[in-house]
Every structure is written in C-alpha cells, then in structure tokens.
Length: 161
Image: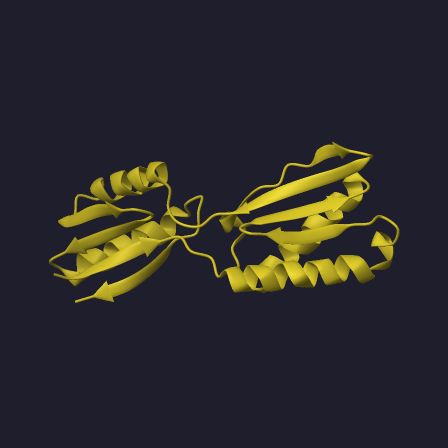
C-alpha cells in the first residue's frame, strides 16, 4: 500500500553554520563595536545577547538573514522575545523546533480527514504516516498540506509504492 511520512525536521549543521556566520558578522560590523553582542548555539537553542535592546534586534535580524540564506525556514525557530537579564544586558532565546508535536499532529490529522479521501493517518511519535490505496489521493494530500502554510515547516519523505 503506498504511503509517505510528514515530518518537521531542520538540518542542525546548517543552523550551526548560520549562527557562526551571524556571530562573525556581529563581531566585525562597525555598528556592533563596543556592544559586546553575541550569537551562540547551545544544543537546540540559539541565544543572542547585547548591551542594548536596539543592537539585540539588529543582531536578531542578522541571524534571521543568515538562516534564510541557508534555506532554513523561520517557522522552524520559535521564541525570541527580548528580555532584560540584568547589568543593562538584553537577551533573546530561540528554540529550534524539531518534529511535529502531538497537538499539531492532531490538527494535521483533522485537516486530512476533512478532505474525505480514502487515506489512513497514523501519528507515530513526532511524524505522521499517511497511507492509501491510490497514489493520486496521496499526492492530493501532499498538495493540500503544502497549500495549508502551517505554522511549522513540513517535509514529505519516505514516499513508497
């Protein structure tokens, strides 16, 4: 029976490269001199810190630009509210979202069910497996999920006949 998996994955090496590029740019740009601005990847979390809220926002813009250049969707990055951490410093923490959460999986499952196609949806941990007898119906599900523009990036893998 034909099937495919719906996942939400991010290449952490590309995220690391984007963070390194952003850190390099903030350390060399003239408008960041003397602000002690840092951009660091800690596990699956990106931490930006600066001496002023304005420079923090500029550093976040540099980070987002580098992520986009590396083809990492900004939907894959969550959080980032600027907070004052003391000593006149400001910090933003971004979480790299990996996998589809249970709530999101249920919403996607409901969306597929409302299409009234003869396909089965199984939630398998942090991914969805969609299977059906007709390949055309599976391709219709893929195109519908692409058009949905969901809040997390979706990839379609392991397409099997």
